[in-house]
Length: 315
Image 1: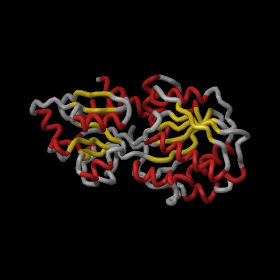
Image 2: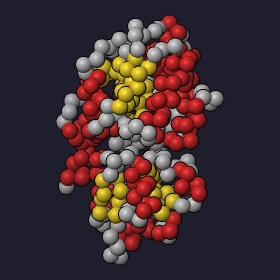
Image 3: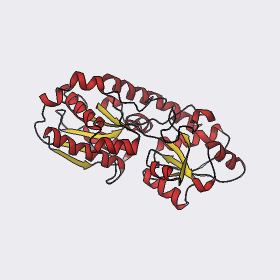
Image 4: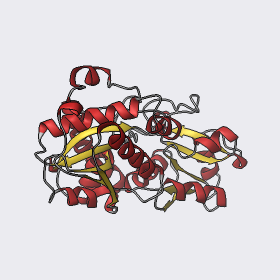
């Protein structure tokens, strides 16, 4: 919700120095089931599978990836509840799963799982086809005030609420279209079925090619590819979307297993010579690593503050 992640700077150096031995000292007592709360073939799924591949190559751990999708990651969270806490079951979700999604569904609290580590943030932006002639979100607002119906693509409930309060703060009413996944938003923009939409990084190639333009950053700071794009706060919006991809385990997970897995994943995603790092850098703006008490506090804060956006969107 509000400032979950301040930047995509890597905060893993101290972790690797102080705990690098964990991944060598600990080993799972069997294969590790890696639940992936995202559709097969997408960017998040690819990221998870590259990490799984490197865990096997570097540590000899047998990783079994499997899709457990649905309900914004909550199905994967629920699936973890019946698994042992010995490190043989983990799930890749997003922080939004334990924040907005859990709060809006009244489906428990973040302590229902063990937060292990984040891997990457997103470059969440409001994007539009360059052919529209818009350069900032202000142009879209003016078009809406002039009578143009603006079709706004979103891929999560949180982003739907964020689009709504953005319009409300500026005296316009967007036609919000909900789809599944960032690729569907991109396809909708390219097909002309949407005028603007949220992109979490998948838009990078199209922006670089000049086909799409990032109209505003939905983060609390500028975008990497469009540093001059305004922030939502410039339009009177107090909310941001700074989700992070993360791994979680069952509640009460063995600390040794949690620390070993967190360290191993952190080293993989920050290794500049590795495939996972290259993919994360290209698709998500670079690795973002947070673990331990810092991650637990950030997730809990996100959960606690989610009610403010939900309430604002319900007014």
